[in-house]
Image 1: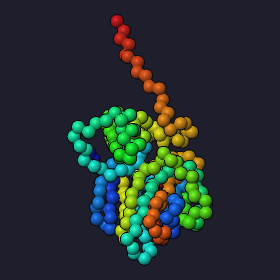
Image 2 (image 1 turned 120 degrees about the vertical axis):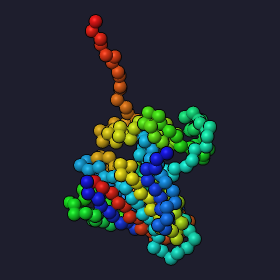
Image 3 (image 1 turned 60 degrees about the horizontal axis):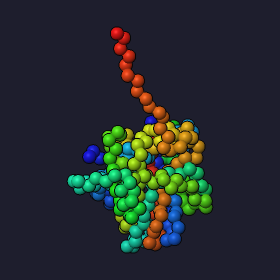
Image 4 (image 1 turned 180 degrees about the horizontal axis):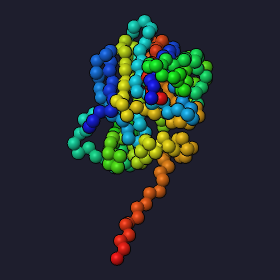
Length: 150
Length: 103
């Protein structure tokens, strides 16, 4: 198992869901996400955003493709990582909401899982997990950092 | 209940999370009120009214995130179903055969 990270960023919307970061696996890999960090790099304000960690069935078209960073001396990642602003949002599985959290714009939010309790991406073509803003009180700029192992 | 993860805000621990043994999702661990037991149908009704209800699967011996995971399909089975292209709630038929005792 090797560990990787990817950093996505996007400008949120007050009227539509926006994907900040998207991890997509494939038929030869089962990525296991063990940590997600979200924070805003916009002018501090008293605003909030609701995020979902949600399964995707199609990767969409990311604003930019990010080369995952290997955290050890391992091989290059097999999973792919996309950063906002997506021109075509990923296709989300409505029944696949794995976590939801509301974050104040001035805070740095981190979710992590113990070993063996990560959220898995199945080894299916185009399956993945996205960090998505579903509701925001202001269209701020946010980062989403995802750590996974594969 | 043993925690499966955690949430930090600005570097300070804010909550523990537990993992649903069916879908694999994480949700904040909360103290369960004594006597608060509902059937799956009652839980679905309350959920549709906006009440967040969690549950416990005695077969998987762990928490479940809510009425949508009321049917016992362990996350390992769901992962296998996704990879094999089966319906998400597919479960193989399990049968036990009593041991034959030769007289």
